[in-house]
Amino acid sequence: MFEPSFESLRKYECPEWFRNAKFGIWSHWGPQSVPMCGDWYARNMYIQGTEQYEYHVRTYGHPSKFGYKDICALWKAENFDPEGLMERYYKAGARFFVAQASHHDHFFNFKSQYNRFNSVDMGPHKDICGLWQKAAEKYNLPFGMTEHLGASFAWWRSNKGHDTYGPYKGVPYDGNDPAYRDFYHDNYEHVAKEGEEDKWTWLTPNPKFREYWLKVMKEIVDNYHPDLLYSDSFLPFSETGDITTPDDYKLGLEAVAYFYNDNIKRNGFNNAVYTQKSRDKDIYTVGVLDIERSQLDKPSAVPWQSETCIGGWFYDKKAHYKTPGHIIDILVDTVSKNGTMLLNILQRPDGTIDEQASWILDELEKWFNLCGEAIYDTRPWKVACEGHSFVKIEGFTEEKVSWDDDDFRFTQKGDYLYAFAMKARERKSTVLKSLGDVKVESVELLGRGPVGFTQYDGVLVCDVKGDLPSEYVNVLKIRIR
Image (tube, rainbow, N blue to C red; front, side, top):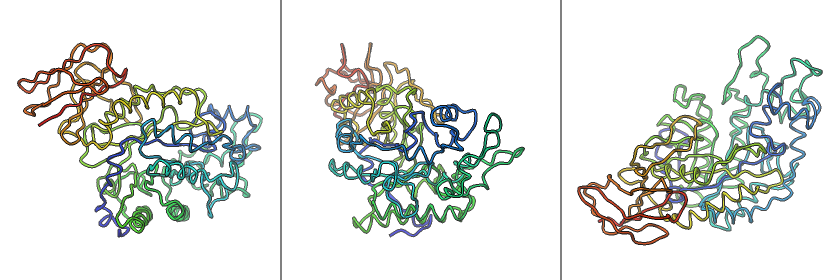
């Protein structure tokens, strides 16, 4: 059993299921999908001049009259089919599934004794997380839940404001209504007065809210016993992700220990994964590092997670989606560096996915059917990358890479080395230079079969010609001695 301390939790080891699964799908979904106008709607609808504020005023009315609480009442999830979606996700390659428990909007997708604004008591009148969990169990998928609650208190200070010009100048938004203070937070301490500098902070120092956060984390663990728990922050309640004042982490450490110990009681050993965004190694090792919309620049000695989305984080009618090839590129580069990828598939407010998202899933299904063995259950090879093209490592930057013939990524499983040829179309040559004195016994192109090869002076030349099996990344299965 773990104690709520760094000394104890540093003994954490990532379970094998997470290391083997490699690819998970996420439902980042809630009332903020109702306007179909993108991410952070609950915050930006209260900031005059933003696109979402203008949309809200012209669609629903001024936020002094029609606020976010009223958006929540509109969310019905009337066509939500978790089993049907889970079947699609499993076929598309997912080997674990993650549901959003609560976003920064403070709406819970589960029944809660602490928050009346939850999906069972209002809106859909459904246990969204519970339904997802039941569907995941049907496919034996580990089930995770994400909490964005820790950042909610300061993030949502915008609902305490008012317009500074126009017909509603000076009229308080509905976040000032005492009848809804429990939902909108009593967070005036984070509201900057006119002439003051912005009081932005991600994780609040407010002690009452911190205690509330811990109660909710324990409620999630007690009611759902998830296999994975994700915090959209550094380990609560650090602002920097570095250990400067260890007492700030007291409640976060208690939550993580509580989560792991619950899993130990149920399994006899710890099979749970906690992910957070702290880069400090002391914090990193109490769980798994999560990197949003970016990656590591080199392989990690311990497993980590890259998370991204096909578009924005909440459904947006105007959003551009990543191509299947771009998603596969991110996955392959991540896995080669000892990472696991979590991908958000956007849902409309009624619970369905659109035609383009469905097509992306179809393309992922075809690719995993062809190349999945090079992803699942693999481990990093001695070399992760070969070539001159690399993913740009910069926060929240996901540029598609223009791959060339010499760009490869590697994984290994047993006696087989998998070489991912990152460029698929119009290949002129397939030459690998990283094997050194490793003896090659056979080479197979997944989806086609054996291919001829020549090996000399540490160079492997493979006879790969014509149209390749996949229009995306292709894989050489190399049996090595």
